[in-house]
Image 1 (cartoon, rainbow, N blue to C red):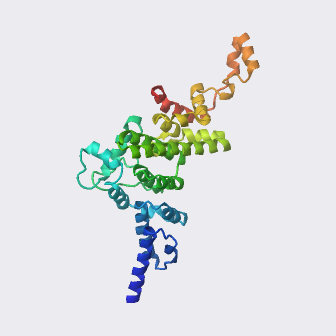
Image 2: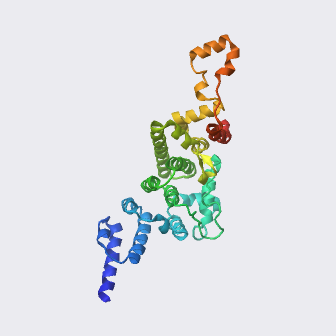
Image 3: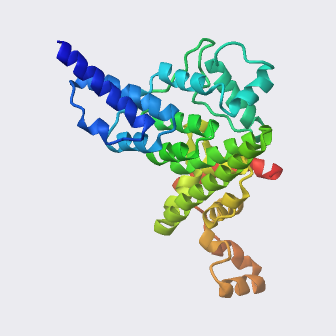
Length: 321
């Protein structure tokens, strides 16, 4: 028993060394039973995230680490509390609460997001129904990377944020949301260096969103348009194009795919192919014989215009852009 206890102690010590000395290969040589191994791995994963050990976190994710089991309400709450005294959002919360009394509460995280995104009219619904107590209620949707992604963005951990962005869902929408969040943070944070870091990350996430859009547009134009107008439940059923509009992301909006969506909205139920009366010859005939205009116009079928009608109603905020 003593030998077993000594072996366990030594193995746990070796795991801790992986963070202090970046010896990530040590953890591969540890052999303990499944339950103990899972507990130790989860504890080490928690420490790695807090210590910004991106390589170790990525290694675990690539090896099939179960984030859904790992990221409990308590652990997410602990992540925010552990960083509350050193994170850029400490000063932002202080502006809202005048002074932080005790540990960071879950409601403060929710209020912080509302406070930052208020000017853009973006509403993040993931924590909208949390209780007044300490617990953050994580939705049961296999999207825990989104929770860790937002935590990383708020804590200005660029590489960690990109890691969870790559492993998460809805890459384009998440990158656009990060742009909006970082843009708001850069306007609220007083520290010059932190402000510059937020601006740098904001531009990088915009580039990531554009990269995803361009790749989709190159592969399938219609698919790219569908992705732009598809509603996102996390953001009050807003679409990617609306996320960009509300965040005043001009660089993303100027992309060809976005302009195609706006052209569809502008043309209404008229088919784009007939928006210019098909060709110059038809246009000339319509000028000479105006009564030919109506026969030359074709309209969209109900299935194809449904999504664009929904987006058109949402993009009324363009008038304020």
